[in-house]
Length: 150
Image (cartoon, rainbow, N blue to C red; front, side, top):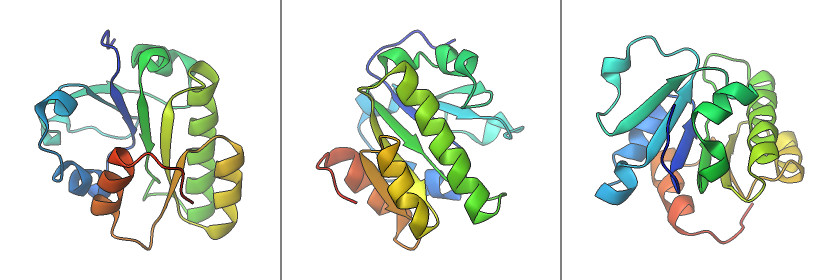
């Protein structure tokens, strides 16, 4: 269980997240990152500064383990192993579950299909990232520029 406060939660581990992390160099941010993933088996692939919780990001117990109630930022990435529609729906459900426990968490959600951008916005996404854009740089820009843009 993660016991810190004011941390950054990432849901889903994939190449886009690795690319995003390559843009970070602030040790204060790096020491407060928690990853939720239910498919990752090889944790040695993760950077040392990421606290890892294996679990379902839609499960309230998993969200308690990452101390979502005291997190300040949430990044939800689309699952590359799912069809686009299914990945979007899972991202939106993860957002709803997270916002249910912490309505004020700043949320950035990767959405693959245009029609679900509206649904993510209705579910409380503060920022939406579309897959067609350069993801690592865009995630970094959205994390540090908290103007609401869709």
